[in-house]
Structure formats: structure tokens, C-alpha cells
Image (cartoon, rainbow, N blue to C red; front, side):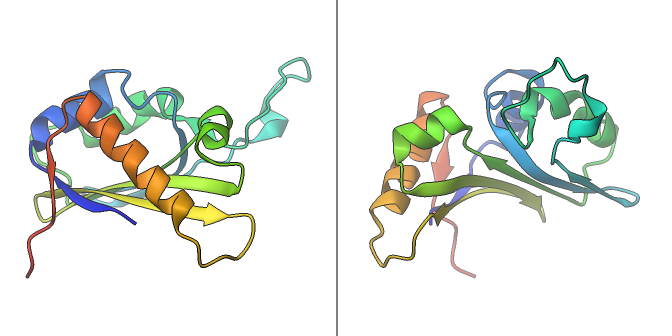
Length: 156
């Protein structure tokens, strides 16, 4: 598990909400606290779609949710907190490891601190951390590749 602080919140939020940087990720959950708390469970409702629309995924993509999230947080005041749980889509999951059932990137904003925290879930129980390390490395390369400056959290 990787825990990092994002050093430039404003640039990161612009990438998150106005650019396509995170669009290909699936989203498991979004929780935003402003004047109230908004919770979005991101499982796709298969009954909503026409029978011709073949959906191979279970979760919304960030590109589908991004405009709705933007509407919830725009305004003169910063949200009290934001939590977004991204997961790797099937193609990315398979390139990282066939042993992984899910790979997560948790983005949290609270107390003016923006953090990125990784997580992984494997198909089998093992003490081997290779998949976790591979995912952490991929996420670091992804962030650095998009010029997102990160640092280790400060001890409190």
C-alpha cells in the first residue's frame, strides 16, 4: 500500500475534474461532504440500459461521473471532504497481474490535505506482496507521468 500527499491540490483537482487524466478508471464510490454528504455507489444498473447495449463492466467510468461530481463541488467554498475510490479497468488489471481481482486508487481530500492511497485485492490468499508492489510502482509512474507532484505524508 502506498500513501502519498499530493503537493499541488489545485493542479491535481484540475486534472481530476477538467481533463481526461482519470477518465478510463472505473469508480467504486464517491463521497462528498459540502453542506450535506453525497454518497454515490457506482455499480451500473444493468436494467437501465437497452438490451442492445452490451456492458462488460460492473462500474461507472470516471468520464461518466466527472460532470456530476464537478457540479456537486463547484462553488466559492471548498468541500469539507472528498473521497473517490478508483479501480483499474479490466485491461489494466490484466497487464498488472492475473492474480489481482481489484486494484484501487483512493483519492481523499480532508483538512486541506489531498492524499492518494493504493490498495489491492487478490483472487487467492498469499503473503507475497509482488502484485501490491507492482501496482504501487504503476501508480507512482502514472502520477509522475502526468506531472503530479507527490511526497510522503508528514508524521503527526
